[in-house]
Image 1 (cartoon, helix red, strand yellow):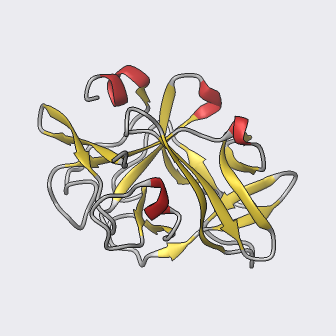
Image 2: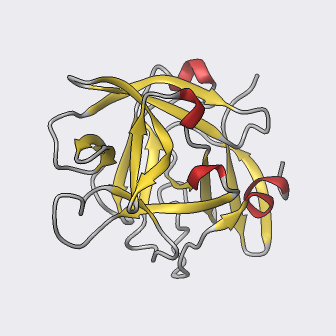
Image 3: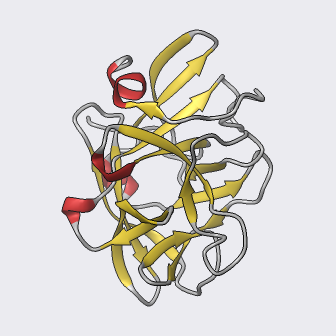
Length: 201
């Protein structure tokens, strides 16, 4: 049955491995379907956008966001994903949190700055390679929207358009069940479609 797999790197080895519920991962986001996937962190700085989810050209393990699906399921099919939620934490040891949707000039996925919490996954798409997936989030007080492939000055947008949904990939380093960075200090950098998907599918 089709289910989500993670891209796992251990030393020089790369492999495709079933992603189990509750397992932390680094979220890689495909900007505007251009074939490059970026690790997701927080925007930073000052102003209303500083807690928006932001794609990074390079981010340290202590600053990158880690994500997990809040379920004990061993195989994350589309149906199982729709029974759970996507959670995140800041760095290696932060508390697990729900994202929110923040309203600025557009709607954005953010760590805080809004009462419109993402209370669950409304719809999920797992692609044929079983590595890429897409998520439509159920947003308290605002209906539901896809995590989109679009951004506004770096802030990742939420959009109600299935044609603009983002391709997402879960990446893990090493075999530490509780830390997607594997305890390594090397930064996370953008990866091409070939590096992230084609080499392990």
